[in-house]
Length: 218
Image 1 (cartoon, rainbow, N blue to C red):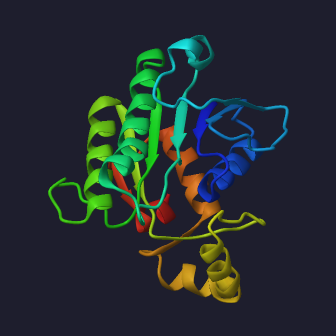
Image 2 (spheres, rainbow, N blue to C red; image 1 turned 135 degrees about the horizontal axis):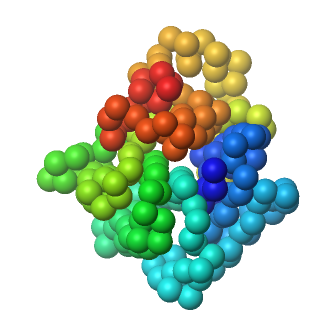
């Protein structure tokens, strides 16, 4: 299996990359993003580029892939709606359109979040925009999926780039096993999330939108 990964430097992306590199059936991982990850592995290659809205100049590099795991995202805190929409919706759909056209049987997994508004009509800006992103990815890509994790616990030394999150995760570390076991509807780990994405890429899923409990059950 050949995988394209967006958001490699983020907490979720780091977890996905780790599991992809460990998986025997993943032969190649291509990372695309604005920043270099600093990772080195025989199966790993990355393309660093400032423009994530147009891929016409690198289309030959984007063919022959089986799955795209799209984990790139930003917090909406302090952002204007147009700016958040450009990063959350426009960047995601630009990638989905290009990759679906170049790879007919591609599985595209978009990492969204718990509380996303599928109606696209709600009052919460981020939930409404993510809902439209989910809906349009699923319409566009034959094997398109949206993952909606709630709380995500990092494992294997993975850290969030957000200082507040890093502190919170460090404080919660002693009770992580208890939280994950007691609250599967709300808590997953970077490992569970990544393995679930690989499972969906290999075998599909019975639903197109998966909440934390669905992710943990895969």
